[in-house]
Image (cartoon, rainbow, N blue to C red; front, top):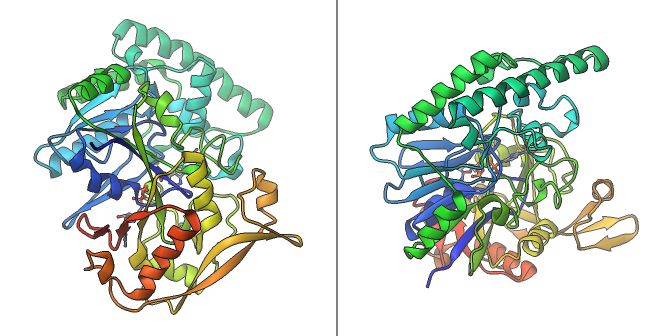
Amino acid sequence: MLKHTAIVGTQWGDEGKGKIVDHLAKKFGVVVRYQGGPNAGHTVVVGKEKFALHLIPSGILQSDKMCVIGDGVLLHPETLVGELTDLHKRVGKLARLVVGLKTQLIMPWHIALDGIAGGKVGTTKRGIGPAYADATARRGIRVMEALDKKRFSVRVKEEAAWNKKMIGVYEKHFGVKPKERKDYGLIGVTDATKIIREYRRYFSQLKRFGVGFADTSETLTKAEKRGQRILFEGAQATLLDITHGDYPFVTSSHPTVGGLFIGTGFRPRELSVIGVAKAYSTRVGNGPFPSELTNKIGEGMRERGHEYGTTTGRPRRCGWLDLVIIRYAARINGLDEIAMTKLDVLTGLKTLKVCVGYRLGGRKITEYPADVTVLERCRPVYRTLRGWNEDISKVRRFSELPRAAREYVQFVEKACGLPVKLVGVGPGRQEIVTR
Ligand code: GDP
Ligand code: IMO
Ligand code: MG
């Protein structure tokens, strides 16, 4: 019997998790996001249509599914309304969408305060850090409160007043001025009356769209009892995990598989974990990147792979595949298999390099260092593999891939001790090799 399955990013995000989730969703009854927020950007390409999803699980395009935004996610209601409005215009019938009652809200002041401290991370400016900080400090406002008019009004007034003072402190004592972000359609940062009115409007719109609000744990448990399998859609990735990633160049949540237990309140009895690995590496935002290519090869990857952020449009840094990282992700997430995406982007390169270890001073190391300052001193040790020239985008069977492409995949399997069961050969829904 098919197990519940988790899809997690093995690198620094944007591995193609959305596409893999869309591909696998047909076998599952429920698709659930368990952490992160609108900092995510998951692309699903169906025919000529391209969908960029930030909060909505990538199963939304399949009308017989239920999609859940779990309690560990940060909800920005305006973004969700925007996504649903766009989807309803473009797609006939969508999957049912349910939002967890315990889900924390991103408020205008979170966005205004994002990046003020710890600016070197290069965040997506979606309010992620400040919103999770408030949640941990027990000052957050949750979906269940937003559904209760009186309670919401009291809570917003309290928090707006607090944040007004905090912003004043930043301005007066640190000389920094948190700004209202017009590009994000933001409403008055601490204007409680306005915020209450706007957020109420968003929630009314969500209800009109038929969005349900329920306890995530209960929803998933009931689905399981009905015999439905659950697909957990990871957002961000292993190296962006607040505990296990390149701290401090990380996001503020747990994209690793552990995040799904907390983010949903559901313990899958049996779980298969698939790590999505791009055939090369990319990173958006700051932080170490041992196999980064700042030359023509890296630029070529960026252009052929359209490596520009789905959420912020920023150019992604590109480099060779780093197997130290994939092995680390395999360990942290207990991966069962790998889905390799974007193999087609490597087509045309005469030789390919794969990072198999690091040189640190006079030593060679093969395990990912826990300390980011150590990682910054690591130099990649490469193995060189043959490239291929044939267009592989029409290939659907592994045996039909050019020999050098098969060898590339097999090299990864051997080095990581894991099977690569899916291979992406193009952005489209059908452009995938299954084994
Ligand atoms: P996610 O955040 O992990 O879901 O990944 P993104 O959607 O941010 O970035 C992946 C990009 O690569 C998207 O534009 C996808 O449409 C595209 N993509 C996914 N798989 C493949 C593939 O196998 N080949 C190519 N050429 N593009 C792919
Ligand atoms: P998906 O789900 C790539 C990065 C940001 C920044 C750091 C912290 O599409 O793979 P944040 O706004 O979360 O506080 O930023 O994390 N980041 C991502 N990079 N893909 C993502 O999501 C990301 N989500 C956050 O660029 O370096
Ligand atoms: Mg993305």
